[in-house]
Length: 193
Image 1 (tube, one colour):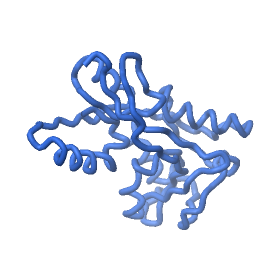
Image 2 (cartoon, rainbow, N blue to C red):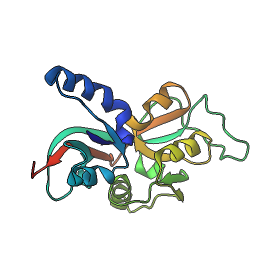
Image 3 (cartoon, rainbow, N blue to C red):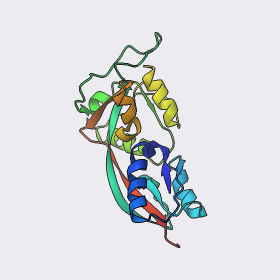
């Protein structure tokens, strides 16, 4: 099974549990990859099934909807050790939704690679005739989480990718509305197998 490392934190255990019940005699191997790598692993025969977002569909791959994820504005949480040189902003502790118009005011660190989250983010901002207040592009989720947790910037991420940090108080997250930004996750398998 190939899946993006960004969703593996929340989907991995439930998927393994379901698979073990349905196929107890089958040995399972899980590969956590960059989202662009999942279709490549399927095409190369390195994985028999994968989890992709709608933006990462690939020719020669059959897909079935699995789940929809709403994206969130993510900032340092109440327990985050914010650096002195960091921006003096924090998200309110209550998880109230935030409109894209307000998100545009926050300094953001976002992924640069297209397609994927960035394409969805840019489209939502364009719908409101806005541009993200981009201060840095980083194509590594762990690095984005570190930057956000240090108080240097905010980001727009799936809640699944930051849920454990929010629970620990290191990050805070607010769902984005007006317009909401969401992505569809799909199970995918090679059409030729």
